[in-house]
Image 1: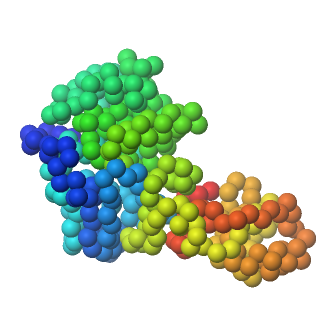
Image 2: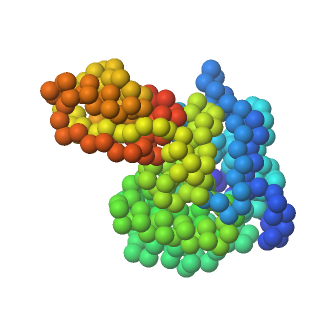
Image 3: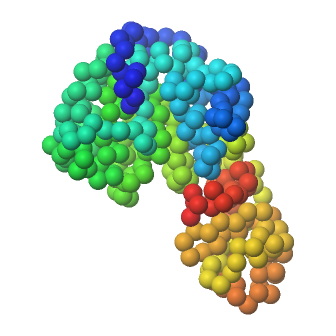
Length: 321
């Protein structure tokens, strides 16, 4: 949460059910630059009430700047952003919006329970602290001081703080970073329960499986613009071809990029993943190279679509490696 908003008096929240035709988030030709870098470039996007929407894109695609504009933490150079038909800052102040920011600072050297109780008192209509503790699974470390929390525990506390205002819209920036597999599973179970009550969730992630498994709608950004949106199946359908994976040892990336049919490559652990529009030609060329071994061919995945739509760059390779 951002304390600069929380210190202002909160105007009354709109009654439940009022103006249901108004989108949860509406961005119209939104533009934001930092010096010579245009982080968001005439971005138009509508998020309907009750949706779970994943915002995907390589590093530098504009995801963080977009969420900052929705939260009122930054002002656009041009275009407009509304949240439930209101100015973003007004929506945040009223408690309609909760945010879990990846780099959000926590009060230093303070017990978790004390942080929750303090922040609860700043909201007009907060959820009960006990309910927030249960939803975020904080019961095991309520008396632990914030500087002694693990990365995953700190993320769960940030999630709890985002839930405190009982928001209609929850914005999550890389929410499961630092969480182990069990904590990630529990987090998304809690998130689905939250959304089942008619709330709206907008999240960014580098875990493409999370977007595929939990989002009703996926938006792919590149260079500050929307390059694709729809369900996971709809986005996958935009990419023809297959994926060939092979052992990475002894094969240079430049060799693979030059293969016939290859449109994108990425290294994941000890294997290369090649997206190709003509797997037969690619395989014949690979098999002429005796260094190629342990080959597998699969249908296109969401990751293939992501790589193809965003134009693979060194930054993307780093994000997905």
